[in-house]
Image (cartoon, rainbow, N blue to C red; front, side, top):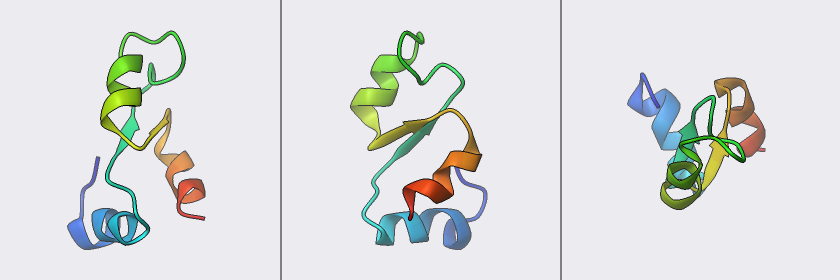
Length: 55
């Protein structure tokens, strides 16, 4: 999920991430859990968690 390529995507790619799934049901037991765990490097439930992934 990104609005601005240079601000949102490039820093994550430079940090080595290929994908982050953001969704309220990304956690254990959510209906999209398989999508979150098989298509992204990390799953978060809020965009507020993304800066923590980048260190």
